[in-house]
Length: 179
Ligand code: FES
Image (cartoon, rainbow, N blue to C red; front, side, top):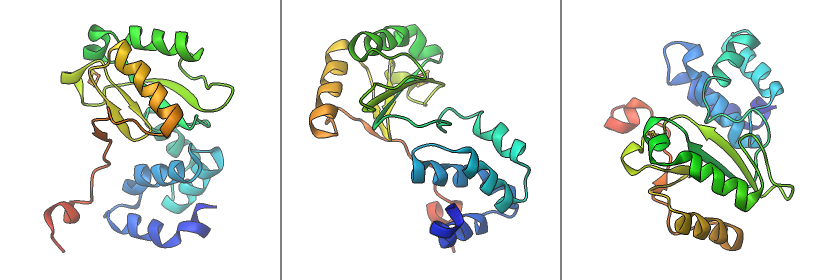
């Protein structure tokens, strides 16, 4: 249960917003941080916390590709398929994943090390094609850099080619330093 483990954080998140339901996405992300994906049980619990119905939570959780609705690999590859990345070769990147790891979108390797999702724009259109691996961005992908990323992740769990982590927006008062 999320509330048992994260009662203080949950209250802090809800307190950021004038309307309880506005805390929905941060709480879904908290659930994903906890389990690696957003389970049905977590969605039901969040619905109770925010006084929503489970379908209201489900319809939001299924809209955003950054929320995983089933377990993902230790390294979750999220290849952008939107227009700019599509023009720059996202299908080719997905082909590399298929050739080198044997998985397609929505699948995970048998050793549970890698999984793949095709996702919508990740706001790095100027450096397409790109993918996000867990929290990190990898941009201007070529087959050579892609091979290096896979090799480094397998060997060290990280790769120096990353260009920065994905950042969730800070609460407004934290950004401005207001109280
Ligand atoms: S189209 Fe791929 S990051 Fe925007």
